[in-house]
Length: 110
Length: 116
Image (tube, rainbow over all chains, first blue to last red; front, side):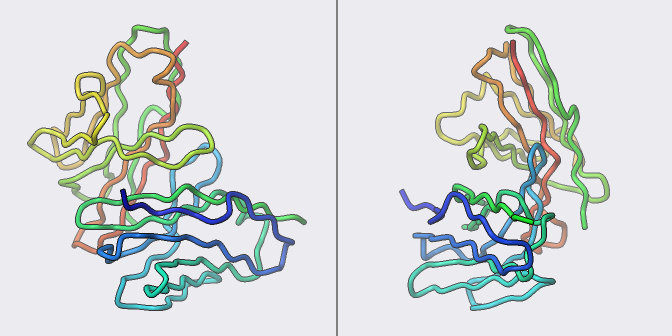
C-alpha cells in the first residue's frame, strides 16, 4: 500500500552544521505533512508542518521543503545543536488519518 | 500549545494483568483522540481512533477485545490492555487533534508498559 518512508535511518552531524533529513511519500492525495521530533522515552513533539499547496515553510532554525513532483519532503535544521539529537519522523495526513514514516535518528557530535 | 497528558508514564505488571492508560486533553476538548503503539527503534503504529461518545475505530490487525478503548468525555480517553502478556510490552502514545480544525496533532508523553 502507499506509505511514507525515509531514506536514511541515522544522520550524524557536527555541532553548528546544518542538517537535512529526507522523507519520501507515495500518496499524492495527502494534503498535509508534518515533522515531529521524538526524544528518547518521550512522545513526539510537533516541529513544523506544510500544506500541499506550499513548497517551503520556515520556522525558527527549521525549514520544511515539499517537492510534489517527486513526492519528497525534507527538514532542514540550521546550526544544529546537541539538543537537536533525537529521532525525527515525517507524517502525512489524508482525511482523518495520520501516517508516520520510519524515522531518522539525528546524532549531533560536539 | 495544547497539552495532552498520559498516565501512567510507566507501568510494570505481571502477565495476565489488565492495565489502563489514560489520555487527557488538559486545556481543550477533543472529540477525537488517537492511540499509537511504538516498539523500540520503530515508528508509531496507529492502533485505533477514539471517538467521544461512540465506539472506537480499530486499525486492521488490532484486537479490539485486547485493547479496549473508552472515550467517555471530551477530555479523556482510556486504553485498557486486557490480560497483558510480555508481547504487549511497548510504548503507547495518544494524541488529540488541535481545536479549531488547524489539523495539528498534540501528543501525550507516552506510557511505557512492561509485562513480566
